[in-house]
Image 1 (cartoon, one colour):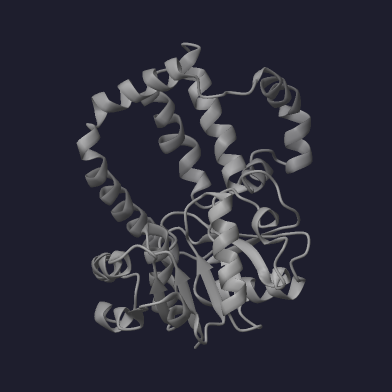
Image 2 (cartoon, rainbow, N blue to C red):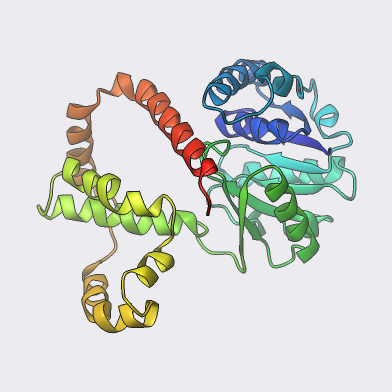
Length: 309
């Protein structure tokens, strides 16, 4: 088992600690904010109890939690780590400062990975002596329930570092995907951005209500997209596969995309959508609904685990 350092003990940092600890690894967590890492331990214990109740961990929650420790200093957190998962604020200047410290303090063989949702590794690792060991390992929140991890190296990231990280992620139960080059927002966010933008446009243009657009996804696209991707979906939606689909529906689908101009989140449309959501869910109830979402994800994860691919 490897020693993992988790730097930054917010929601994502705590979630990563669960991912690595349930796979048997020793995890040290550290956060610059006093008391933050200790507070995260309580959340880890609660989430592990939920995972156990859903049948998603084989060991007792306390056994898994014992593998997670709070480090008093960054140096203590990094000592002996083979993989470092950074989860700091989404600001490039903070990433540069943090990775400079990580590169200076870590052993030469440690991989330095960032959980950033959209800042490319090239923006904060270029000047480092150990820049070849740095990459992005972008999870989907929460990673202990949604296993996808996007691995995105900078132009100078060593291919063996990407391979090592992909192997580690597979061994801890995640599903790694590798980008062959950096793109703005990486891949998952680009796919999500296209659908969310169209959802806003349909409301803005008076085509459909907020509630019914949500229904189109959760009772339509989302059902099959929970176990197959867009290419497999269209491959199965025509008798002879993708080429047949393109021949049958290409003019229609291509014409639709010609109408899809950029959506820049204008204040009026955002306010309209927010008002519609608040009639369905008061702002103070968002936390409870998020917990409900996680329980539904646990049930879905347990179901998918039981099914043959």
